[in-house]
Length: 368
Image (cartoon, rainbow, N blue to C red):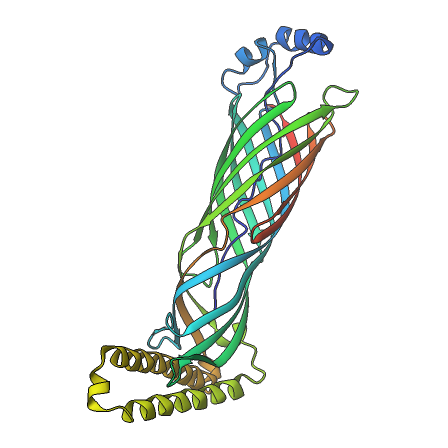
């Protein structure tokens, strides 16, 4: 069984620049300079009006290079698995997930431009190495109705992904304080998945910039939130030996088959020991039906896995599942050093909830 999940998405990719309304007596010279200077670029639209009103605008064009690491807990549901393009087995009733995490390392390039003085638009192009680690067990009931683990497995799948997308960021600042709402939409192409993984990110932030002696040099700090939503359905195919460790796997499968048969005998013995009246009892009948359904599902899965192991040259795993973030939101803090209006260096950390992330980026801005 494999879960392939692209969790890097777009993160909050905007290096923090914004249109800032300069205020205060100590900035009177700067304010007069901005108002008396004609904005020389075609973008943003209304750029000349914004500068005449005292807004200090960033250069309209930019290019960002970012590195992102992310680890996130995921929830997997409605799992179906098949081997060598054979029948798909519904494991929803018999599988229990102990742990499911997704990791991603990515490098992305983000070109952007200011369409309006308070609206930034950008594209996303990324290459990444996502991986998914899952620990799970197959459980079946015994004659007493207790569910017991008959087969424990762990998988680790590593992939290469190409991501593309776009985003928008409304933002505004007054006196160095600012608010921003980053929104982006990404599609990640992973060869092992039938369809690209779609993700949306929402990242509200608020912060403050502190100037140095040079008016174009500052450091900004901010806090905010990060909301990641991924498409729930996933279908794909991978090679068996790429996700399951081969050491002791055959022995585990053999032991699992024995345990399933032991449980089946216990259930049959219990059922056979009931009187006809007791067998007609709805509670006992439902218990027997549930046990047989679970034992059949576990048995078919273990038998198919055993056959795939004995045909390793062609062993592949097909799967479909629904997955979601354990927690959609987490907290972020960040800082950016602006050397001048051309160059910025940024660091952002996300934590709390079930996701941790780290982003570092370099931005260059220019006008045309």
